[in-house]
Length: 284
Ligand SMILES: [Mg+2]
Image 1 (cartoon, rainbow, N blue to C red):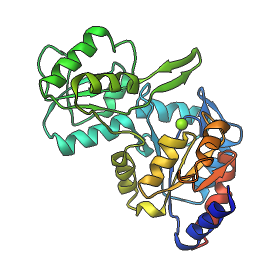
Image 2 (image 1 turned 180 degrees about the horizontal axis):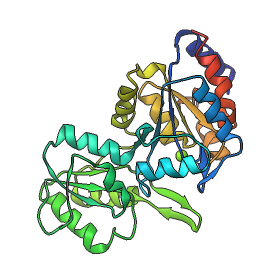
Image 3 (image 1 turned 30 degrees about the vertical axis):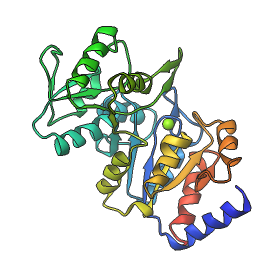
């Protein structure tokens, strides 16, 4: 961190009392569903401090129940209610903005479980009130995407659980919803609202769930833009970890631009988070 940034961060520490925590899952607690060294103990240490917390994830391959089960098996004591997934955020958005709407969700799989209170339709031939794009997968076929486009042009609102471009799998890197979303937007001349990180809507909903002011909530993530700078743009305190998808070159490119925002804090891994939280929670 440059001296100027350091002094700004110190100044932030001195005026903001941190009292809540949002944690990304993939790349912060686990990589390829294996715990990051020391992460289990760090989460335990944070739990002992009784800091109000939520887990904020764009993962759409597992439901919240499945995520909690996998994390618990790995040694993290996490309850489904503590997980704010992009699907849950999307369901909250639909209930608030499109109450009673019929929704065609382009995403097979378990995340639809997290959309309770939303009337999900499976027959794309019947015109729905809203279309939701989940995480990309085999269901993003030419026929299905052409139908999304057709509905979009006809004026049906299209929203997306997130606009991530890629994700890593054990078989290699895969393209994600953002790739299709940009093409659809360009072809239709309309925008698609994305709900998960880094959307301000997602951060706000998670902070509201904690019942805290955004300036007193720390967001910890491995994605510089989506997790950290996105959170900071929504008035949260950003913490970047050097694990998961963290790349030194991405951070260096940002730091070489004197006008670009930089993370409030950078730590090697979640192992360093309990000590940082101790400092942030006592320095107001
Ligand atoms: Mg991540």
